Each structure stands twice: as C-alpha cells, then as structure tokens.
Image (cartoon, rainbow, N blue to C red; front, side, top):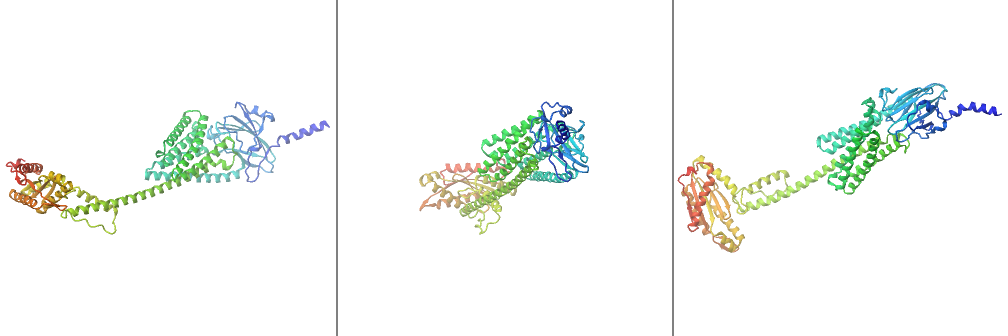
Length: 620
C-alpha cells in the first residue's frame, strides 16, 4: 500500500509542478502573466542561471501582482513563468515588457541558454524586434509546456508590466497605440508651433517659456515611451539613462518660468519670488546631478522636484486666484490634473498602484489635458489683455476728450481778450469728430498760445526775438527802414501798491489794448516783461516812429484805465531806434539801443519819448 502511494506521488509530481502554469490564449485576448510568476530577489546581483535554476521552490515567492512591480532599489530579480499550450495547433505569442526604461532584461529557456538580451543599457540592435518596448517572441507547440526564466535589473523602477498576446493581437494593439501616440505628440507639436508663433508676433516671453515647456515635456515623454532610444540615440547608452531625469528637471524648470511669468509673480509679495527662486535652484541642482552625478540620486531628485513643484504651483495658483487674478482658476485646474497624473505615474513605478492602461498613460493624458488647459488660459489671458487694452483706450479717449474741451475753453477765453490775434475758435460742434484729430488740433492751438503772453494776449519775449530776427531780415532784403519802440508804464509799482495787483493787471491789459489799437496790422507788439512793451514797426523811419510814439503816449495819458468804478491815470515813457539794418543778427542790439533811449526818457522826467541815433549802424 505504501509503495503504491509513492508511485502515485511520482506520477502526480509533474502535474503539481506545473499547477501554476499559464495557459496561452488562442484568440485575440491579452493575458497578464504577473499572477502566474514567481520571483527570487538576488541580493548581490551575482547569481547565474545555474544557481538560480537549482533553488528550491521554497525560495521562490509568488508575485501575485498583475504588473510584477518591485519599486526602486537597483536589485536584480529573477522571475519564473510556466506556460503551456492547451490547443491542438501551434501559435506565435509575444511577451511584451511594458517598461522601456528597464536597464537589463535577460531571458533563459529550459536548457539554460540565454535566448534574449535587451534593455535600455544595451545597444538597440541587440533586440530581436526593432520596437520601443522589450518584446520576447514565444512559440509553444500543441500540448507543450515551457518554463521561461527572466532576469531583471535596473536602477529605475523595477516594473515588468508584462503582457502576453498573439502576434495578431499585438499588431492590432500596436496600430492603435501608434495612432494614439501620434495624436498625442501631434497635439503637443501643434501647441508648440501655435505658441511659438504667438511669441514671434507678440514677443511675450510667457509664450516662449510655455513653448519650451511643451518641447521638453514632449521629449521627456518620447524618452519614457522608448521612442528616443529607438530613433534618436540607439547606441548612446549613458545619455539614454541620464536623459530621463535631465528632461524631467528641464521641463520642471521651464514650467516654473512659465508659471512665474503668467501669474505675474514679479508683482506679487516677495514670498512668491523667494519660493520660485528656490525651486529654480533645485532644478539646476538636479540638472547638474543628471549630467555629472550618479543616476539614482538624479532620478529620485527629479521625482522629489516634481512632487514638490506641482503642489507648490497649485497652491500659488489658488492664492493668486484669491488675490483677484481671475485667469488663475484655469491654471489651478491644469496643475491639479498634472499633479494627479504625475503622482499616479510615480506611485505605479514604486508599486503602490497597480499597473493598468490608465496608470500607464496617466502622465500622458494628464500632461495633454494640463497643456490644453494652459493653452486655453493663455488664450483667455490674451482676451483679458485685449479687454484691458480697450478699456485703457476708452479711458484715454475720454481723457483726451476732456483735455480737448478744457483747451477749447481756454482758447475761447484768450480770443475774447484779443479779438485781432487769430481767428476765433469755433464753438464746440454738437458731435465730436475723431478724437485723435481733435487732440492734434488742440495741441496746435496750445502751441500758438505759448507764443503769447497769458495776461495781455500780446506776443511773449521769446516770440518777439523770433519776429525781430525775421523783421531785420525783411528790412535788410527790401532796404526798408525798421523801428523798434521800447515802452514802459511810469510809476507802475505805485499803481500796484495803491490799488492792488489785480488793478495792476487790468492796467497792463488796458495799456496793451490802447497801444495795439494804434498799430498797423503788419506791426508786432509784445510784452517784454513786467510793465514793459516792445513794438516792431516795418517800413517806418525815425520821423514816423517818433510821430507814432507821441500818439501812443498822448492816447494813454488821455485815456485812464477804468477799474471798479475808479479811473487810474497812466503814462508811458518810450525809447526808440530806427534805421535800415545791415544784418539779421542786429535785433538784440537794436533792443539794447531802444532800451538806452528808454532810460534817457525816464531820466528826463518820464511821460516822454526819446530816440537813440547811431551813426555807425552798419557795424551794429
């Protein structure tokens, strides 16, 4: 009886050994071999296949997870998978390793021969199939059972993410994946080109930072999905390993610059600027570690940087939203999506979350949604800037309209004082024409007013100098005489002291009006300063000038200034000089000669006319 039991156990031993074998599908379904795998952790990474194959079953542990993920640590893991073909025909299967960033992956058959060597730290040409992922073709005959040994070692995430499917299923899924990846990268390229175009047009650096962020994020995804090693650097193994944390930190750096600019943190409190400067410094540190330091610290540094920056950006965005920056709500949504997707991707790599299509492509979907939201937010920012510009333009137009009205009123007042200066400014029309044209006209009128004295309406001293030069030039060219009269109100200080300065202003206006009425339209009259006036008389010799000066003196003396039911007597002292100038530059000299004659009239007792005759006029 005992011998019979022993014989029965020997017969059942193969069945018990293969009890956990994976039946290969014949249809187009996809199998996850993770739950059927057993794992042995190689503590030193030095064990060979002969040592591993002789391990007792008690040394092996069931994986139990669909994704066969063991987190980070850089250890070597041996995986054992038993498969059998329960069908009556041979089929070709493919074992797809869904983690293109595994450093080393070796496969062994039952005979102990290594049948497959791949990984991103081995030349791309070693792979059996030119594909971004690690593919192990399998062929099991009808009823056959096989055992596959896998050795996995990587400095990154030890996540096998394996699936088993037929060639037909793989080709179908590969077409669908390439379509989705093409749409994904096509959308990123469209965003890149669109925002670069806006930057070239507007020169707004926020669009440049966003374009660089999209470009670096796209290359980061290109590396993570295995396309970079396949198409860009198939033999640059050291750069392939360092490029992943490098591009992650670079995308984070550009994202910080973009967030800083678009949220206008330079106008925010200093705490925002200090925080962003600290994060930028951390980005540069991780970039330096990725280029010059060990891979593992750089990798974990990039993860820590991402975990730190995403919540900080989300919190800053919420705070800016509370502070009244309305566009921040869209950025808050974008950062929330990116945080969720990035954490899902990181936790999947550590094994905290199970492998699935959702977690596998979470960062892609989150990044695409985040960038789409950011693009919408940038467009909203453009719209907000346009609205602010229109409001500013409307405000400016209103200010210009008010300025035009004020200037028109001032012109009207000046023209009431001096009826013969310029044509009266027409009264304001019922409907204003183009505002910019009105402002231009008002500026021209203001320039004309700057030529005149604000109290008397006469020419001011600067304009007198210009007109004196022109008058000398005309007289010299036509050889006609020119006369310069310097007029001064006598005892004007006593008028101010006795009647007040307002009365003195009224006397100045009265004197200017009386003098102007006696002059010809071709003559010029200016207020020289204080109570002094200067008259330029074209085509007037000494005799004519003396005669006019006496008329002006007698007219003012016989017509006192009426002021508040009073009659204030006034008198003039006049000095003059007349002759034919020999050079246009003699005007100031002639003013000096007329002024000397005025002093002579003052010294002679005031209320009189004195002339200055110069024999050597040509040498003036």
